Amino acid sequence: MTQPVQISFTETAADRLATHEGRAALILGADGKLPGRLPRALREAVTRALGSKAGKALKPGQALELAFPAGLRVETLLLVNLPAGASVLDARRAGAAIGARLGGQHMLVMAGAHKRAGDIALGLALRGYDFDAYRSKRDDDENGAPLQPRVTFMVKDPESLAKSAADAAALAEGVFFTRDLVNEPANVLTTTDFADRLLAMRELGLEVEVIEEKKLAKLGMRALLAVGQGSESPSRVVVMRWNGAGDQAPLALVGKGVVFDSGGISIKPAAGMEEMTMDMGGAGVVAGVMRTLALRRAKANVVGLVGLVENMPDGRAQRPGDIVKSMKGDTIEVINTDAEGRLVLADVLWYAQQEYKPAAVIDLATLTGAVIIALGHENAGVFANDDALADSILAAARAEGEGAWRLPLGPSYDSLIKSRLADMKNTGGRAAGSITAAQFLQRFIAEGQPWAHIDIAGVTLPPSATDLAPKGATGWGVMTLDRLIRDRFESK
Image (cartoon, rainbow, N blue to C red; front, top):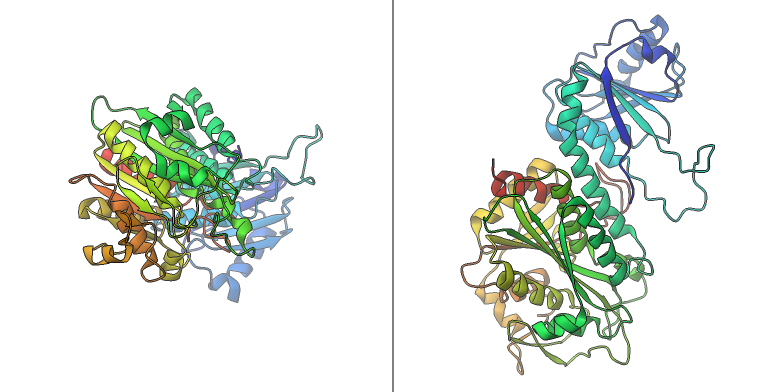
């Protein structure tokens, strides 16, 4: 997997800036005060830059770049505006401004006594992500290995900061794991390969079980199996367990893992279909969260379940008009084979509740294009039958700077998925498309079970870079769910 940039912490020594080769960054407070013992020519250049129109326009978290500054050996010097009282999110954006300019070189960051140095480092790591596994031309070292940039933070108390940064490093690795999964092409990340990558996390202390098609059929997961029956890749359900809190009931995380979605017989238009490699984004987030929990040895019980299928057109593929029976026992008329994710989730949600008796259930899925029409690429759509759980998710998302917005549920929407022939149909048409999808899922939630559904179709692979991610997969949700677990489900 893609590894976060190597970050080390050392005591501040301003004179090292003069001899450092590569790139450097100065974290400046609102007063623009510079550290002592800087070359005179450099101090004058920095003062002049900060007094310019561009320098005066810098907002907290933004940076101004000086090329080949006088008195230094570095190629570039970043002047990063971050007042002492800056927010966590501004500090991460400041780090991201540095991370976006690493350039494969050794970066020296002079953060001094800034209390947000840890958040600066996390933002730098997240924005420094670069998925280059399939580029034939890469920057390599003298031994032919990919060149890995290094970052040194100069701070007042490096030892304590290094200790506190351990959990942030675990979080960054979890986000990177998710991003890698979403960025992988479908000819590589098959259902089998996906399951193997999750099995490999046993070495971190996770309990991992792969449920094969034969057992899935025995369990009655006919809705899930119907989605994958037109593919050469066998369908799988993978269960990951982290037991860090004794006997308490676990939080269940359920992810949609459609490794490629052609739409099936209801085939999608060719334009943009290549992006359907990201239709396993929900499963990717669940996997990234489970990796984070294991790496930081979380004091929580969490079970992550992902349904891995491929939706392809074939002589064996399910057809519009087919009726399938779910594990719960409800029958579903398949109106559109491109509304397949909810069929996968229906069976996995029911299995999660029957098998693990969770304290709460949260599912994540790139489920509907309708949520993008409603919320664009700025917010995930949150649906819930429990106000306290919904509020906790939204609060966690705000704290981590990941956009989320609650959308309604209600019995009046049920008429849209009423079937003439079966207990329900799998789509209600264009009107309220993301809501009717959530209403469908709610039918597979037991009475009294706290549950939330998060539609991440718009935030998983946005069309441009975000504050903390380059263009491509964002890993949206790993930070939010890790925060939620810390705040609500982890024993103190």
